[in-house]
Amino acid sequence: MILEMVRANGAVSLRELARVVQTSEVTVRRDVRALEAEGLLDRRHGGAVLPGGFTRESGFPQKSHLATAEKTAIADLAANMVDEGEAIVVGAGTTTQELARRLARVPGLTVVTNSLLVAQALAHANRVEVVMTGGTLRGSNYALVGSGAEQSLQGLRVSRAFLSGSGLTAERGLSTSNMLSASVDRALVQAAAEVVVLADHTKLGTDTMFQTVPTDLITRLVTDEPAGHDERAATELQALADQGVQIAVAGVRGLGGAPAPGCPPARASPAGAGRITYGCGAGGGGGVGAGE
Image 1 (cartoon, helix red, strand yellow):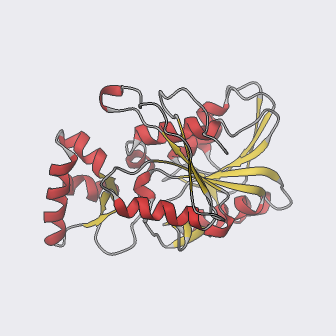
Image 2 (tube, rainbow, N blue to C red):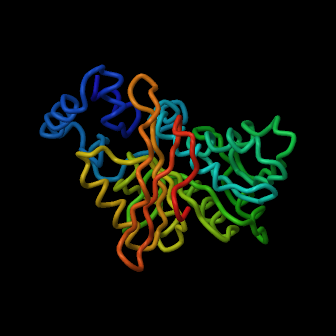
């Protein structure tokens, strides 16, 4: 079952594997270790991926079922960063789709996007203006790509861009597995004064083929907290903060849908570095922590 899920999705978190297999993360971790020893998969921060270094891109049907609680919490927290009357760009992805669903209630908002899923989520929001790029439809993620999309973004200037991707490291920043998607994401970045990356813990430490946003251009990262045993992901998160990225960590609903416990106080990184703060995501009922 574990190997089938990894082959179908390209990358799967230990939490998701434990939920589907209906066992503990400790048991899943042991099974993953055994499969890695056989060369059937590779262990990554808090999950498992196909062997061979860079991960391949999964399609929308697979991505939409991965880390759903984490994406919901991240979207809840990121939505609190958007103000009335603001103009923003929102890239393609299942996490940004969740964000778009929450932006429907922000009056006077203008959203520029290359994602059909983002546009669909806002289609009935009477107080939100949606501007779509041109381009060629990429069916695997319902996004418009190519020169038409990139040219339509020239001369555009908005307050911030909300983007997600396939992987995030302190060394290379945000990356994706598709060249066309990467090119459009770079154009979205050029149009924004600030860049906010939405990435759940399974993306931390994962590197894919095409860089979209170098670390020094990432203003803020909204993510969920890695499991306590996942020291490598926690190290990656701190490395991003050390390079000046402001990090907001969303609380996630626990087992059975129970709300996350009270959000811990803000935790500052070393002097001159970015800041790691905590906010309540799904079920948490609060905004971003101090400093956010």
